[in-house]
Image 1 (cartoon, rainbow, N blue to C red):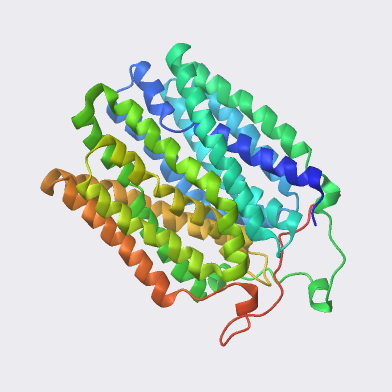
Image 2 (cartoon, one colour; image 1 turned 180 degrees about the vertical axis):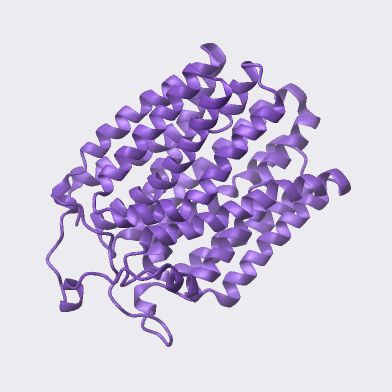
Length: 415
């Protein structure tokens, strides 16, 4: 069992990392608009950040796999995020903003797998599901609280103050990181002769040939294709209907799913450990088509908030399962973070297509058709998981065609 001090430090690291990442959300577009940037210039800057994050997913995962110093990787990512925020606040001109977006995109791709790797090393394979549920709970709480705080700072102080605050929030994140003891990440005595051997580094080609990796990547892409455009499209519709009340409705639509994530994530982690990964995956994907169809027919603001709360189910499930399945599917290799990068790339591609396709369908045929199409993508993800996704839990891994080797953990950090 991991020492309590390091476990609690990891809780607060997730909380403050979520705080920091919230500062790079929609606040960038609002801030740049106040600096007399055109919509085209803002879109170009945001697209550069999105593209950087997309192409950096796999390389960043490989970087984290290659280093035994996972805490150092997290620290470097936090420093990079602080620099990115400071550049945005101090120099809101074209080249500094573009450089900030590139730095933020790559640092984010290092930060997520590095924190997941620390989680795996700290608690071990057996406790990973519940640990990931705790990570998701603290991230959700951080997201919800920081969104309100930064919104207030941006409204009552200045747009730049959001990014000064974002940079400052990396300091408590670094403090939490320092409280994770290096000794708790040191190698444990091997339980079996097989565990004494260093994990096979594996190859990227072998990883991409894995049925589980390919199927879950498809699920990630279809999930993002269905999910990414739902709230922006709903926001457009509610703005047209409610006018000045739209900001309050959208804020509620953001906070409600975070509350659901905070409530159910630990339970999802325990369920994944006790009943298997497929059941939890099907629960998360099953909420998508229901949500899309409800959004197509519900136009009352209060009803919209309730429907958006269903987004918390999918967010909780994927927050737990993405790193958990990466650990399962890289059992016996040293490709845990690379596998997370593959899943992130698939989700990024799906999200990129989602907003463009939904915008086109809404413009040509109406929002109801767009929501129905998004629900169809969610149904396709559910069908893919139901028909093709193997169970990857260790107890099931010894079945026909499955690899029953002991799970390899990321390289331990030197004490």
